[in-house]
Length: 271
Length: 271
DNA sequence: GACATCCTTCCCGAACACGTAATATCCGTG
DNA sequence: CACGGATATTACGTGTTCGGGAAGGATGTC
Image (cartoon, rainbow over all chains, first blue to last red; front, side):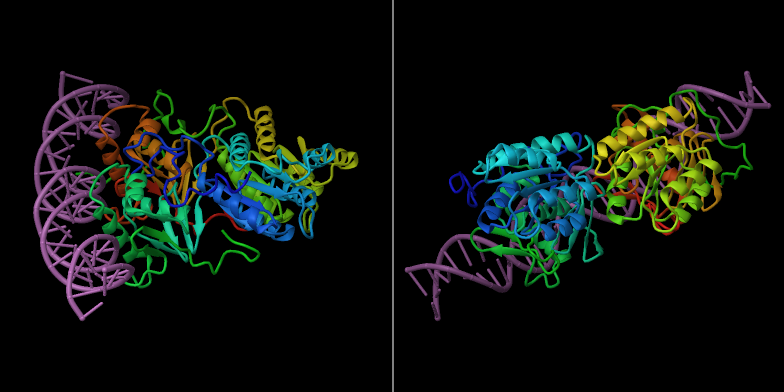
């Protein structure tokens, strides 16, 4: 189930999304899909599974925060305000069902339970605790993404604005088109904003100039130095030392990658 | 020569135009009815829950004021005159039931009680205190919004005027079609008023000229410079330095955004 | 019917962002 | 160490976007 159709390396963009991230003005109306870019809290103590699931969700365009135990999960839920929680049934310390119950009490956030056991008892226990859906391992990541989308569609108000992105000290709000870094607002141009937004949503992932051109500009051809120059201008505004980038790094011969300086990000785990 | 508009003692505002009130047109919410834009006082001492519920209500088009204890609640109720009160049963200091009783005594405002306990006793106690409805935690925010709408529909007279909007030093009353800023009345024309009303209800969100044209003017086509000109005239009246706007900002290549100078906002809580 | 107010459209200048090209620098490799 | 390709840096021309001014039209008032 896992391992096979996992990360497509660096080759392909999340092609599932034809929509460009570009200018937004020339594009017709916003939010074709309200479930896009939503925040997901993944509670899973097994690092391998957590990693794969996270990659898949990120690939699908979600923001993912990981917690490895129940208490961390509750704390992260309070801080990051996820739009959905993926909750492993078996957890060290606080049990999954209990976490679910508390989550629903405190935040009324939709929950999808994950479990290795497919017994009827568990299913009932989970749903009674207030889970919105139930997925048994082993599951295909593809199916999981579908379920997530489905639950989100039911739970997210139709025209709610896209959630903001908080990564590596950045706080980017698509609705307001503002970004701040460590609290200080940044004055970015439209292209710079779109470029940064794209990269912030996919941290730690390399993108070639072609891919960026396609994703941010919406062009299939064109002078790639355009990307280079914009990266350069963006660095000028977000890097402490633009000459020696610490955030928006160059991957020689390949492209660019955004590396969030993960000092903040909660304990237990991070993005 | 646009310079001087005489401040009206009262009357100089343009009379309400017979055409439909474009200011209430919105591209983000369903079904305009009498319950729209109503003021809700949320009394809840747990900040996390308060935050989530507030977000949901705002999303649904309500104005939300938060109080974290019973006394603050009573004071805010007297000052802000909410159309409905969401009241946590468990409160530090003054108990929820007692708050409810005093609220009903002082103002005839509908109350929905929130409680963690679903016991019959509580329900009865709450309803006896005069609550109009009763929601037990954990509750789904969607359900809560439905209940709020339902109670409001019963309590708000059908053609009662829309509640006023108080944001960033502005106080806008749709019914009277008056606006004041920091207490000083503003003399706006009809279009200016509609434009400001729209923006005030959606602070910190960028709108393109097309969107504004659609929302405020109700046109699908048309010369977008119309919007530009009205924005300029509006700035002339609401900005301290119209040349360098601090409230109604232009987002280059995208549109305009209203940024309330958030210093005021009621005590005991925030927006 | 004269007048005033407001709305819309148009024009022009300035500011701005963008793409491109030209040059310098860096990097891995032979 | 030298070479070639990739990336960084800088500069410049151009098209777009915005704001100010003003004219013409519509509407309501006296």
